[in-house]
Length: 426
Image 1: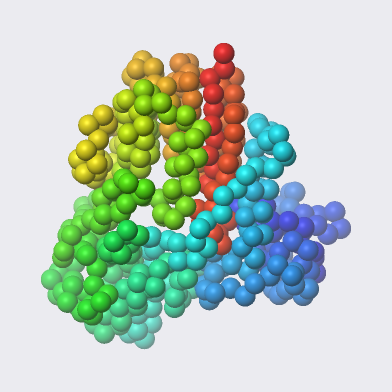
Image 2: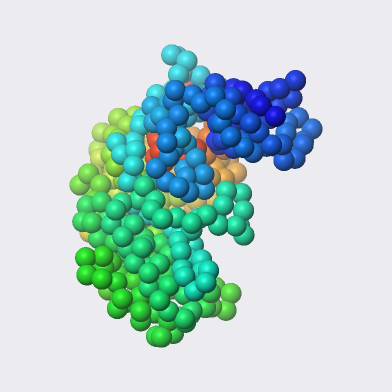
């Protein structure tokens, strides 16, 4: 059937209406007429897929990546419209808990719309003894779409990935199931991770250590593999970490470390956090879900004391190194989960609490602790507007939402990053 796309709703579904029914499909821009094939009916809507675009929008652009639907389905939209769309989605999701005075939420575009990713992970699939790189098809763990080049990653990362596919094609022994490349924007160094179903032998790994041609060689190669139900890790060659710099803070990043994927937009976020935090150099900061210390270390020079809470041993290792690299003597590591440490941290009466939780949002114990003994300010960075709205609603009894801003950390994808500033109520 033919339908007219009304809008794109988070996280990227296209909404259309026909004869009183709501349809959600996977392709189409607002105002376009598309042909859809219904897939399954629900009580209040119908899932569908788009067969073809009949009347295209003036905002439609030709995608650069042949696999765009698997990784960045907004490639077909003008970038300016992408930012406007995400700003509208964020405002709509947060409307029940907060509305800006202007009616719109400020949204910072990425300085780089392409080649912005400092980390990319792909599957390696084999057919007729030829290896290819691939993403999972959207919504499936069993189907794949080949990746010839990903325009979200750098040219250097793509060259290294092509080397891995070439080497995997020329050998009959076991090949990695997945490959990941991390890159430092500051130095250009890359770190290669190979993911195996079992620990590789020397015969398995040697072609990847010796076969990468000069000019594409990474700073290090690390293997990950399943061993007795756990994920094992082994340095195969070179270094197991690369160094990157954001503003004047140095970060040592390991193969399994969490770090922001888009380093180009990170300075803008830090500037806004610094402005909203109004640091005077006397503040006591609690940085929850701290990772490598991205925010705790970035603001250590602006504060008196910083507590960084982190539970992952791999992150803690590099957090320690990063504290030393930056000579941040006022930073203390709290090893464990944020919910475990919040009761003690609340007793320390932090002036500012920074939270950057995973997509599931704040743990209930953290919300309760923040409400029981409110800090003067909370800087809440979220990668999921839905859980951000939930947590803000729970915190509103003790805090006033002073501002919200969106950031396009992931151009051409439906993902939205948002920062909220909360002030303790009198």
